Image (cartoon, rainbow, N blue to C red; front, side, top):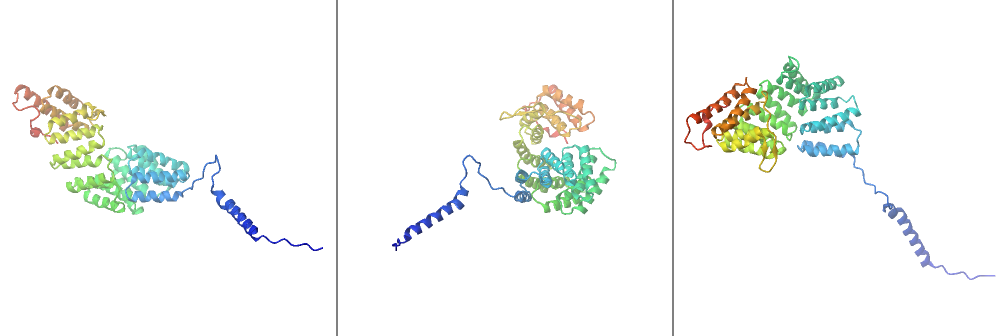
Amino acid sequence: MTRKRRPIHWFRIILLIVLIAIAVYVQKVVVPTVPLPFVATATATRDPASYVADAQQAFENGKLLQAIDAYTQAISARADDPAVYVALARVQVFAGKYDEALVNAEYAILLNSDNSMAHAIRGWARSQKGDYANAKISIQRALELDPQNGMAHAYYAELLGNEYLNNIGPTDAITLAGEESKNAISLAPDSIEAHRARGYILYITNNYEDAVAEYKKAINLNANIPDLHIDLGVTYRALGLIDEAVQEYTLANTLNPTDTRPDLYASRALASVGSYGLATQYAEGAVSISPTDPYLRGNLGVMLYKSVDLTNAVIQLSLAVDGGTTEDGQTVTPLVLTAQDARALETYYFYALALAYTRHCDRVLPVSQQILTVAQVDDTATYNANAAIAICQQFILTPSPTPAGTATPGATPTP
């Protein structure tokens, strides 16, 4: 009646427990990490706020393009936040990307039609493009939505200042501009735009020293915005502080090497005090950035003329006036001469003078006649056009033994 009990095989039991534990580990830990076949692998989603933080830091460091990229990534991660579109559009205006700024400001308005800053930024971008009528509509809408929007008051001040300079808008535009710039300072004392707008209104009303103070306040808020240094440089030049102006232009160029304005403005500032050789170097720098720009070619030609390098002056001025092909095969479109375009007029009459002094008199008459036809009321332009004709007449009546291209133009009155 009794049965002999089988012995317990502890080794088998322990082995079984180990195998079960391994199976559980594989099921719970390993399997979830193995991607299923033909199924896309999930990627971690970065918090959009981190992109915004990166963009703000890049902006503070003056890296406007990096800030734009970071804001764009933030929008890709979360496309329903109007504040990010507004922030992106603001940086794009500072970077000179006005069309892109308009697009993003309009996206922000689509997401929230009552967003005061979205309307303000759209107005600012429009104003920078010269679309003053629509800019005013946008900025006034921003102020209707939020009368305490100091940034909108700053943009309105700049707009009114532009209208004053262009002889459009209300008759008291400059008075209104002054009031708006003061409102901006009062409502947004820590904003770059408020001090920049106040500085601009002070500049165009010839209060240069006060304008310098305002631009410096803006720079203290962010020392890495290229436009602020350009504005301060322009104001220094108005005060006759050429070295200080060139220093500011150089800072702007360092912050944004793709902008031709710092080199262009530096060349003209230096030429105003007779530093023609250095002015020519800066003019060449501007051309190297944008070799097909006829205005920059014309400016270089003027600097070469003043440096008495007439042969090369004719080459550059010809590209500006007649158009042509650059040294590396790029096409320059000729300037269109209008009475309102002071830079084009300057290029044309310096071209006429350079042609006259280098004995290319067959080209002098048609160029001078264009000037005399288009700019009859511009005393400087007509004087120099007639002077070029007179030089050629003198050469024809009294041939000079001086080799072509070596005549000195210093006796010819030019601005």
